Amino acid sequence: MLTIFGPRQQFCDGISRRNFLRIGALGLGGLTLSQLLQAEAKSGLGRSHKAVIMIFLPGGPSHQDMFDLKMEAPMEVRGEFKPIQTNVPGIQICEHLPRLAKLMDKMVLIRSIVGATGDHYAFQCLTGRRHQNQPPGGWPCLGSVLSRLQGSVNKAIPPFVGLSPKMGHMPWADAGGAGFLGIAHAPFKPEGAGKLDMVLNGITLDRLADRKLLLASFDRFRRDVDASGLMEGLDAFNEQAFGMLTSSQLLEALDFQHEEKQVIERYGKGDPKNRDDGGPKLMEHFLIARRLVEAGARCVTLAFSRWDHHGDNFGALRQDLPLLDQGLSALIEDLHQRGLDKDVSVVVWGEFGRTPTINKDAGRDHWPRVTCGLLAGGGMKTGQVIGATDRLGGEATERPVQFGDVFATLYHNLGIDVSKTTLTDLTGRPQYLVDAGCQALKEVI
Image (cartoon, rainbow, N blue to C red):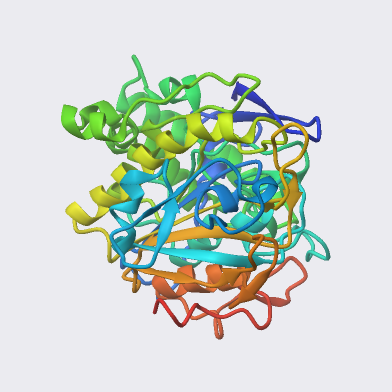
């Protein structure tokens, strides 16, 4: 078992965010790679390759400085940025997002997302739920649900890949929590230098086959004595792990250098460092996400930069918005050019919005009462805005949208009916995929 620690990320609550990757190359002890890739066989699984790319903006992006500018508000509210017209008449966004403005006809802006809790974690964005009153084991995130319901498209490609860093030390704050579905459906995390350890240098396939047989005998014993059911279906789990480790497809998908030079340049080059003024700005993750879903992943999550701007909000946004503009616009264009826009849904959001009033440090503080989000692809009706806020950008005045409504929309795009589909939790109770009352956005389907 190899543990590789990634960069730390500091938010205003003082918690250090540390991402890590554990790879067990068919090892005999601990939670091996095969355990992280276990897939239970299920009859009647659909094999269509629909997918989701979720781009999480950790820290809480400033909605009124990006997609919902308030030019008629007082100076202490409206801020320093100007709006620009998009290619859809009547829709304006921030001047620092010119590339996205030219693609507005391929996107949906939601300006009225409500129900955030106001804490620093990705939980609501990844599960569509609040962290209070969870069933035993906790709510699973979107990628874990897809892993359980739809399984693998390609045995060499895990159905759920998490490019996002681990968000905190609490289980419900993990950017890839599988909840009551168990580690069988947790994300594969190919972050940092750990990717190199997937290369099987100097090991022949014959030797691997021998180790596979030995591992199977040990794990069969361990499975038989495990009363929790965690090891159920482990043989199939090992088979998928073995397929991944002996196939080059996953490594090729992760290696964006296989792309043409002009494609790489279009996505741009960010800043991989994790300084005090922000998190890593990994532009290649946008490209890798596209490569992974094209190769067979059903869900890819990634986190971009850090948006917790209690001070110097506008200085930080002047650095980050152009990078987000380039990476996200390249991804959306790429999906359309490759004919993936009908099958691959993209969602971009953070855990809450920011205060209407700018504070004494030229920043904006936490504001859970309303925030924004962006959708693209998935065969949706794009080129529109859903919802509106008041003149200060502090309250939703039209079409309030719950996190669960966005999830219901994503599930609809994936061919999953949230009114009928359930998953069984650890107590044996059926659980619906979204909270009661949440429905797919009728405007986009």
